[in-house]
Amino acid sequence: MADIDAVAGQFIDFYYQTFDTNRASLSALYRDNSMLSFEGSQIAGTSAIVEKLVSLPFQTVQHKVTTKDAQPSSSTVASLLVSVTGMLVVDDSPNPLQFSQVFHLIPEGNSYYVFNDIFRLNYA
Image 1 (cartoon, rainbow, N blue to C red):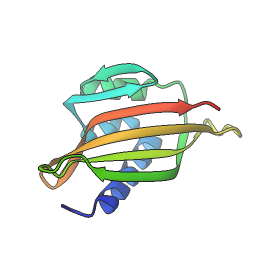
Image 2 (image 1 turned 90 degrees about the horizontal axis):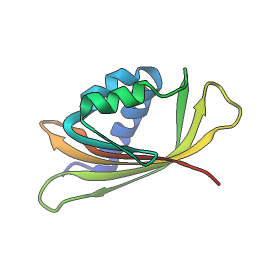
Image 3 (image 1 turned 60 degrees about the vertical axis):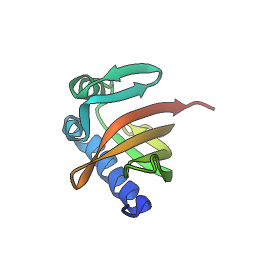
Image 4 (image 1 turned 90 degrees about the vertical axis):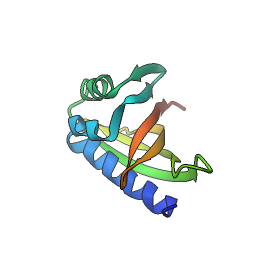
């Protein structure tokens, strides 16, 4: 298995850079069997997931990752779980929002796709 911390770091960098600049391009990371839980709503399939992400009610967003953790999720497949916490700066607001997100990544060829994605804002 590849170094999971390196894989997770590369994935996180790519995912959030893409999210922050062109959310529609995230479609390459999901499959028709993928599922997103976004603030408690279940969304299944690439097109529905990307439609949800593109329709979020802000013009600009910047993810600032605070922590990231990765673990293998199977003893037989090189899949992994990636947990992220951080801050969201939305529309240049001076008050960033705290978030947490968990990805279940499944290997496909020389890359990975997002099988499960769970996103929550963290209110204190």
